[in-house]
Image (cartoon, rainbow, N blue to C red; front, side, top):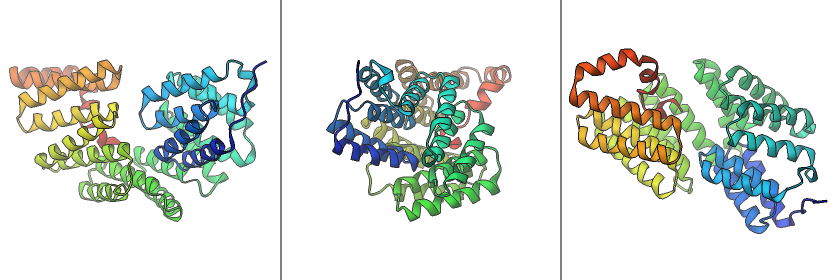
Length: 355
């Protein structure tokens, strides 16, 4: 019978650091620690599963799938895993293959099986799963339960604040952001603070408070100055570009977005690069630079199709359609808008305004 190999002591140290970073909601930091863990011991199956989870959270879906497949290959007999590790592996696998109902079921099972000391973290994982399913009531309930069980759960407070903001419950959102900020500052966790400033800025932008949003996003960029977190840097720059666009500073919006896209391409952050191209195309469209905007929309569509990103493909097709209508027949555009109002309204603003 297959028995899972006990990881080396050094691999376990890096693994524990990665898990701690995940519990703080700092997934880039977690990915770096977990990469070290499997570098020390490449047969540490649960470390591969954790790394798959972190990659998925930072939109590196290709590497997430690679790590998941590696984890599964290392445990041909799943019964050799500890029960909670097996449930977690099944939950991650279901999440990555987008079977979100199954993932929720596994995470609920994990909550039931987790030791009391791990219950809060299990509720955060369950909340993340509900959130991916757009079941916001259940997600909020899970995060609230996590904060009750662990008053220092920065990840729970941060995710809770984001969901309150999505519900336009601004008072609760700001109060909960404040709790998360205190915890991250006490931890001197720069990634956590950068994510908090980014999310707060995104919600302020959604509320139409552009100067306040700009200040928060600039604070996020300051928090990222000393690190190498390209994922956070790119998405913050793209959000800031959207703010500049709304404020009418399209030249600055173009400059910031172009820089972000180049960084995303260099770092192989495909989802952000694709959506950045769409947002940049939209900025150029409003500047009347139709030929250049068409180039960006076409490139975004090619990338979305190549990487099987359905949402990005839908956005790029919608933008390209608008470009054709403006250039060929402005009257036709208004007709298409009336016919496709639910799609156009959802996709019309740059994605990163919404966090």
